[in-house]
Length: 115
Length: 140
Image (cartoon, rainbow over all chains, first blue to last red; front, side, top):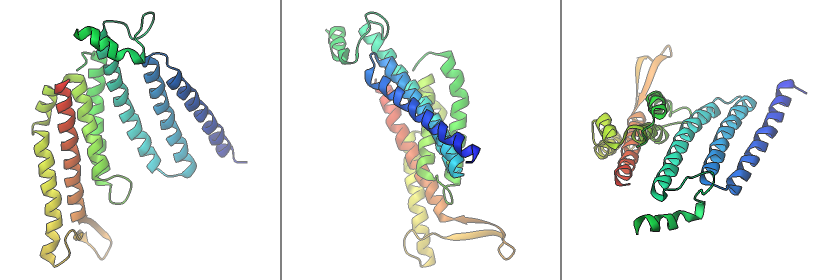
């Protein structure tokens, strides 16, 4: 069997394993920053998936997919980080560590800050 | 707007990269994946990143033209490229081709009204996305 093809196959399995673990973290949480880091990790893994597929299929179009995804993924992470920051300012509590606001508490925090 | 020196330094590079890549995507769209829509989206993403890093006012100053005007000019350009075919007794939106250089030897550059239409789509997407995002940015 071709060495390159074997290497690509092993890489595909490892990347998908990484996506599965990141997805588990996305579901389990427990705080919002954990989920954002998991989403960012999934984006990076899918970028590598595109790169692997470009080698496998010898189609350069997938390289462009990887570039666009990497650039837009950065923007998504920045926007979500700003969302977390704003929530922290409004609620007056940290978004991670002891006493952190959980995902469902947003409405309650909003009420206390307004009234 | 986030007051972060890391984000500002990264944005300076990434906005330029995104805008360059958007033009690349626009121009190669006829033969390969790409075109006006995805090019416009990537270009708008560059300015969205800029708006997050330095604020909506600075982005409006950097754009120079109001984004809604850009979208309207794009719509006009796309329409004009369709109307252009009528002067050659073709149906509305038929692609018109002309070739710069010697066509016999194969040493020529083909240019079409399809490209003009794609540039119109690029401007519409670019302008409308930025209109939305800047309005949201100023609201919250």
